[in-house]
Image (cartoon, rainbow, N blue to C red; front, side, top):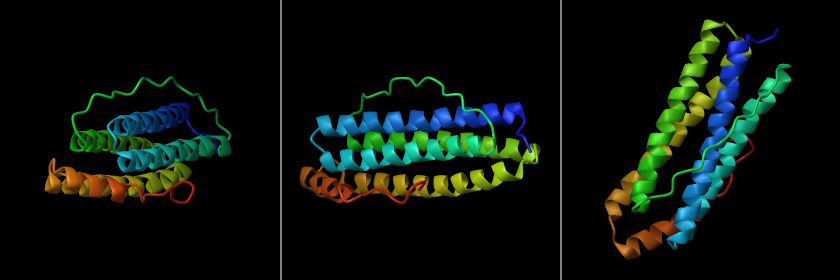
Length: 169
């Protein structure tokens, strides 16, 4: 069963949002690298990779449904941060906007009674719950250590241990 065009358009917009997220996280990785925090930079590079996988999951979904993917332009990511905490507060705000976007897309899929779309989007809804919880945990750790250099150094080392998860994670 073919998807309604406005649902296809909404999926294409979400693909753009996921690629934009990847670009934002790559910009944050650059900021961390430039501020001598390679562990945080590694964490953001893994996040960049995951967001790219999320975009490709939607890309493949549209193609598997026989629909066209229309790639949209990305905008330059911001890069003016004051601290690791500031960066992760931006991450949290960004993830909340992605959650809202996915929820709206799911609502559209419900309205259109498009069951395959609902199923794939349920995975994204669950993923967003995990993403936001992880970011909140990091924010709380950063608040706990404050601007204490040795504590930030140790947290940076811990962040470096993040590795990419399974494809589509």
